[in-house]
Image (cartoon, helix red, strand yellow):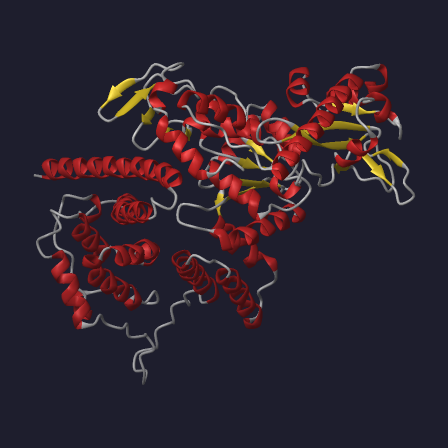
Length: 613
């Protein structure tokens, strides 16, 4: 019998979580919960909370989250089975006998980890012996410090086909083959896989050595520069991220995770103080690896070389990610300067240059648009139509319908602006011409005009929605810029729908070829006088007005979106209580931030009104 979810539920019910945590961490009672400074990271203000009713602990600072079993494994360092045994003894329960098949697999994995661990120790020894001198000199030339070599476990595999059996005599040939350390040919002979290479251990999320990567010394025709272990009972390259065991704790501190192309990039970043980086292992990012990244942060940053190969790799990752996009789950894309990898950039410009780039990655949507726009020449209508077709093919792969709709609208807007740019104003005809060539702008419908008048009539001082409507009527060219946020707001807030639909209609009446396309004579109401917001005051510099109006639209749309996400999380709490608890905590924090921004916005409005009066 295996340890079932039902057995774990019974164990949690019999153990008071706070009493276990109190043995090593001082807790203070706060209502129904307990609080403390987080034991998983350094902090001065308590952000670690324990809820005995829900049987979870959670840190709002670093994101540490779990139950009594994960506390024993993560904070006490016990294995899962040992944690269950210790807690079961305390609760007066019997630990179920493990499933024989699962137990045999676990035992086999443990034996194979012994092989890779001893092989790692041997490789490290060889690096510092005379036969490893060339490898050590190579690493030194690359600028790697002794501390970095120790931290990442660099070693050396000597140039011999039969070195490992003598170095690891207590393991039989079959175990060496099963770990990928030795290769068996069709005729039954075996030889070492890694020879004459700088060695780097690949570890799982718990830090156990499960595979290796090797870099050849010098240039040899027909020999791969980098060689990784094959898939084994220990190692599945599509389910493993290099350096995850180090990057996960660092990510809790930084709120970021960086994905680079290779493990040497990870090492270079770590030596420069950027410790939250991981790398796939010889393949494009898989769906499983993306899920692992999203469990760490909402928007992982993919960092690729600026050359054509790097951009193709980025596009493969984007294509893989599009079907998996979900609310609050996306990717950032960082394109390095052409010809530079992270190591080159840090050496030439310093770690600060890398941090600056990481602070401003392109969004997934921006990267998708730019990549496809620049993929082919667009000198003909047919080529432009091909661009639109490629973009819509990508959009169709997005499974979340809301996100798919938003991507479609945004990309079509960008395509329209690119494919149908405003025409140059026509030269006026000479006096006496039989026809005035100036286009006649369309007018706003009576219903839309009446809706906008109601939205602005006397209420703009009391509600942000009224102020935003008035502001967009005063600055109608901003409507299209904020159309995505306005449409999302209309979907979430039915009270706002009529005014937003009228604003969209207003945007469609704009004619960029006419300087006076918007006017009272064309049926568009003039916004009322109001001095409580900069974007409603006469004489406000255009840049300042646009900036404050953008902030107002963002705040107006963001709060209902977060409230809707919170309601959806509460609705599925019974299906996934642990995941929903963490998500609710994150959403509550975001809502609190939005509320503070709204209060600050309101205070600024009041100050403006007082100053003007």
